[in-house]
Structures are given as C-alpha cells and as structure tokens.
Image (cartoon, rainbow, N blue to C red; front, top):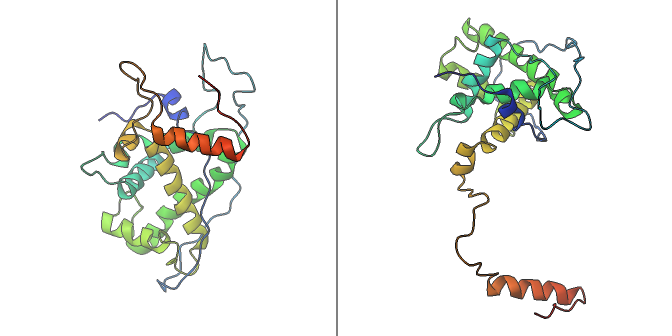
Length: 226
C-alpha cells in the first residue's frame, strides 16, 4: 500500500493537545539508555500568517522526519492502535505523516513538541540497541513492547524513565488526535457527524423544550410566543 498522502490532508489533523502528568514507580532495575538534550535546530520557515490564501492553499514549511523515523512511528502506531473489527491499524492510516506535519509546523504548540519527539525517537533506537542489539524498527514486537512497558503506564514508570514516559505520552496523544480526526476514528466511536434531515423538520423533542424553558425561567426570560 502506498504511504504517500497529501500534506493538505495531514494539515487538517493538526490540533492542540495536552500531556498528562507522570509518576515514577519501580519496575525495571536496568538503567535506561541516555536521553539526548542536544539542541534541535530551530525552524526558519514561516507559517500561514493571519490571512492565508484559501483559494490557493500551500504548505510553506518543509517536513522534518527521515524515512527511518517515519517507519518507527508507523510501527509505534500499529502497537498503540492495532487493527480490530472496527478499524484498520494506526500504521496504515498515515499517522506518521500527521506527526511529521505537526512537529514541522512553525507554531509554538508544535515547536514545544518538536525536540521531545525527535529526541524520543532517537532514544527508542538507543534503548533497543542497548537491550537487544538492534534499533526499534529491527526489534520484534515483543521486544518493542518490553520497552514501551517501561514508559507506557502512568503509575508504573520505571525509575529514570520519566522523560521517556513524557515522550511516549505525547506521541500517543498525537497518534490519538490523528486517529480520531479521521473517518475511521469517527466510525470507531460511532460519531455520526452532521447529517441532513430528510423530510419535514420535526422540531425539538418535548424533553429538549422542557430543558430550554427551565433554563430560560432560571434566567428570568420568557419564551417567545409563536
């Protein structure tokens, strides 16, 4: 299956999200692979500005991730969002493209995540090499889960893995944003979206009218007469 996808499509996924707090608990005595805090080169591209040309849309910034990093994200997406009877796996839904677009956008929210995601992907490879003599993409799924189990559960984070857990939670959060912004994600939770009303409009239900009248009465307002 082709993994190419329109950048205009990935831009539709870019939305704000917040990370969860993290707690450390004993789980694995092994010391983690070093976490890099090397400075990430800042982006110099500009954004859309305050008045984008919607008639001739363009993407004015370059993408960031290389093919290996994109592959790592696809594998991670498959582990976080495996295929089931409702939807395909995360790795087949171009969530790596969404994350690439997110950390490449020159806006404050996205740039706060840029270093965390880039250093986190580097750390995943280092941790797998330290434990299994291979990078994350070359590891087995059981080996990948071993690493994820150190950082995936908020109340079971191994000592020394707090920063890595922050990376995992943010990566997972962005994966979920991307997934539930897609038709497959909406269908997974049964979201119907805006649907046309066929035939004459039946009006609000009696229950909705009663709630409206109660709210208006509490505000001292009288219902409008028909």
